[in-house]
Length: 223
Image 1 (tube, helix red, strand yellow):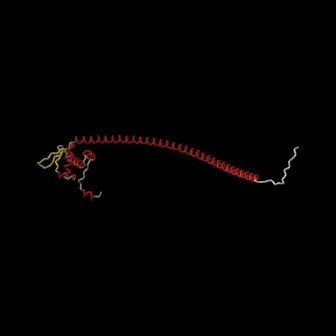
Image 2 (cartoon, rainbow, N blue to C red):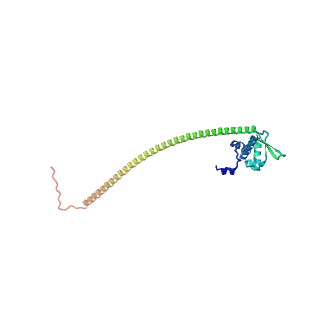
Image 3 (cartoon, one colour):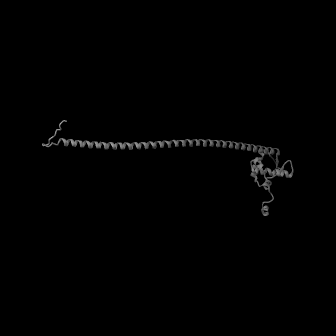
């Protein structure tokens, strides 16, 4: 960072503890408390430190409304007590370090509980994942059985189709033989009809024919 930038910021830099932000639930309250603790440590006075709203704003940049919110937050938590001195028009701020230590410890316990809860949730997630894997394996096994049954069904269907084709082939052969037999019978009937017609014609010819008058029938003598 350039020197000109540092000079423009000024020499009033402060550090705020992330743990205080978490245990107070407010950044402004944590900044306010850190500044009061800093002044107490700097002056080394046990009874507290006197400050005005203007002095606090110059130190940490919080306006009056932001200071009032931070003070109410810290007072409610029991870590800050205050007393207004009319004679000097300043507020005496005291910090209950024992109460602050309890809150920090409780925050640590809460963090541990949250971590334990997170571990428990992770274990439950792992268990659910294992159950999901088991169900997936069962589904795969059922699918494999279904595929096997389908393959057997296809095989049976193919055999049925083959038998049906053979039956159709036999039926076609039977039809062909029947057609040949019908053709043979028709031809036989035709021949029989022609023969009958010829016989009738010969009979009619014989009946209508007169032998010649000079035709002598010789009788062969008996032996």
